[in-house]
Amino acid sequence: MTAPAASDTRFASLDGLRGVAAFVVLLHHVALVTPGITMTYQGHDIAPTWSLIWWASFTPLKILTAGPEAVVVFFLLSGFVLALEPLRKPAYDWLAYYPRRIVRLYLPIIASVAFAVLLILLVPRDPSRASSPWVGMLADPSLGAPSVFGEATVLFHPPLFPINGPLWSLVWEVWFSLLLPLALALVLLVRRAWWAVALVSFGLSWLGFLWDWGALLYLPMFLVGVAMARGIEDLRALAGRISALRGAPWAWLGLVLLSLLLLVIGWIIRGRGWVDTEFAISITPEKLLGGALLLFCCAFAPGARWALTLRPIAWLGKVSFSLYLVHVPVLLAIAFAVGATQWWLTVLLAIPASLLVAWGFSVAVEMPAHRLSRRVGALVSR
Image (cartoon, rainbow, N blue to C red; front, top):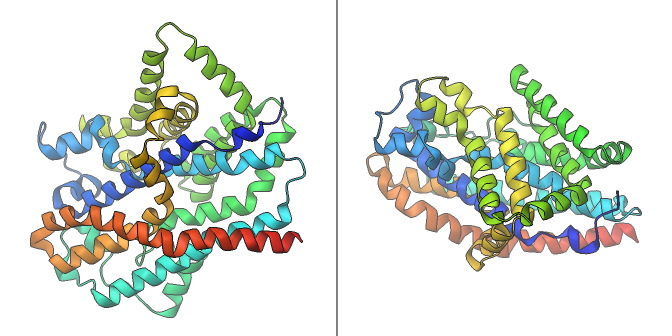
């Protein structure tokens, strides 16, 4: 298999996909502010059929608030995108990679924790003002040095991050970043059998789900993305055959809809009472399959590539990491400020406020961190 060409190391549409996924995570947490939606996660009762909550939670519309499923897409994207350049460059500078990656991840993470602490000091999280069980679960977090330091380092913190909840996924992002050379060595070792690595990774992730073992559940998801990057020419050839079909636009649309359905199928069957809430919440193998199929479509389907590079979506992609890091502190500050009885006001204010703060955070923190990471990488390389 030939290595990816230089132009193959950048997919603008995947930046857009990352932006859409971050926005879905925002909508997911905004929905959890509402008492009814939260009960679909923490309760065992199903909302009345045809009710608004039923439509939002147990139909394909669930894709709009499928936050955990969007995180699966993040993990696949990270594996795919991070692997492309090293696969193209046999003499990739690994000495510069590590400090560059650490700076790029940790400066925004640390800044987001400091920002969350500041908001908590300005707007205390009073449990009596919680509008839903999810909001109450994150009320009154400890701001002691061990808690703040633990969240800022992410690797050595308990599963729950009460100061800035979304940082739980950064645990696995950082571990994967550290293990990237091993993942690349594995897919290079199997040569053209990249698909075998993907299949084994699916199996390992399934075992992680069965055994409730986070590392085995999440890290293979990144490896699926790495395997797809190794097989990029095979995937490109497959995409070419699909695009050559007489009804190619409909074929691509069908694949996109199938990928989205796989991501939320657990919630749809939950609405029919066939599985319990714990199963619907869990990251099950079909969600990983749906995420991988969505990644393939967004990378190669002409219609998806066009839609995901439209200016608003491209902007979301640009601020996606910042949006992911700051939206929950902003949302909770608004929720505790307005109180439990006016949760609807939180819903109205949280989305524009989160987007605005994400833009400011991107300009003030994330973009400077990118520039600093490049300078640090160049310095270490020299």
